[in-house]
Length: 400
Ligand SMILES: Cc1cc2nc3c(=O)[nH]c(=O)nc-3n(C[C@H](O)[C@H](O)[C@H](O)COP(=O)(O)OP(=O)(O)OC[C@H]3O[C@@H](n4cnc5c(N)ncnc54)[C@H](O)[C@@H]3O)c2cc1C
Image 1 (cartoon, helix red, strand yellow):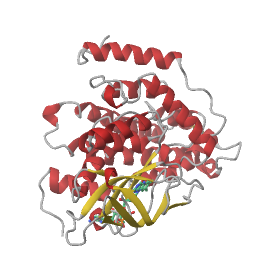
Image 2: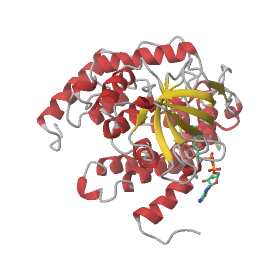
Image 3: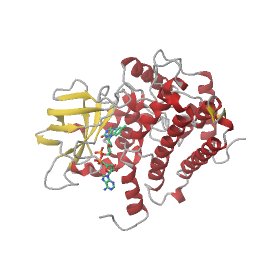
Image 4: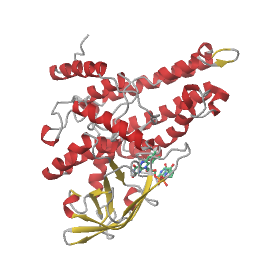
């Protein structure tokens, strides 16, 4: 039955998106793909994923709501429909996640006409990969403590400093960069740049290895790197405000320009695992304790899905951070609980890692268990999100 809440444009687009995804399954990759975009490590992985994003973009499923002047497809509120169709088809994720979900919405809001035309099309097609240079060794939760310094020299800026945890730094052509341009003011001393990375003189990228053995994030060093003033986004001293736009999208506000959803029902894999595992002398799927734990997760999952529907109801969004931040906290913790239960159900077999042919689901569970810990830290730790929800959304007294 057609969804009565959809406009005629959305219904038509939904039919198209479902048809396209049914007729155009992603080709089988020749290499193992990582669980999320944050762990892309090798050239064959990125080449495959770039190609897939380009195909989805050409089909109108990426950049769906972005104006046509900037390389998009000019629809109205159809991106979430494209995301859902891709997720339901079990399609691979969109690899240019920083470009699609952070850079594009930020540039649309704060960029000049020239910046929108220059940067958005390449991000949609995945021709130009983006990374985010916000975190530093002394500026994570305390993001305003940025020490990377950009000093003005005529029509240029000379950048010196050190970024860390930069996902995609090793593949990125561009970085959304937050840098200090004045030491006299903490927040008003920050400025936002669209900074060239790949092969740019004065910029060096060093991969960091995670506990899974994958890379994904990096350290990025700036040593007298020169960038033209034309690559500054919004005014000098407005960096904090612009970064807040980026973070609100990073934490789940809006649909960005694509790739918003992952697997449509992450519980399916867990249920299959339980069906193929033993617990207390019986099939784990028949064990009441395991069944109860799976049902608890299913309830949380349904709550998260309902919450994303609530995000589309204007009357429930009196504060722009209320639902995105709730979603960031609950979905990252849901992913951790899911992976932990998978490891628990697989039991001793969870110690078999991805190269072991006897590992359940090719080693998915231990890898997922380790990677999901990053999810409660990335985009700002959940403790910080809870502080923001308490203080800014609910108006509770500020913590000391
Ligand atoms: C997988 C992954 C990918 C990432 N990708 C990027 C990226 O591409 N670009 C980028 O710029 N950054 C990236 N990050 C970095 C991320 O944004 C930071 O790790 C995060 O903001 C936390 O900062 P920190 O690591 O410096 O921890 P800290 O700020 O040092 O925090 C350490 C601990 O103290 C707690 N804490 C700190 N202050 C408070 C407080 N006031 N109240 C309560 N608890 C507090 C934190 O919750 C945390 O548990 C990534 C991180 C991960 C894990």
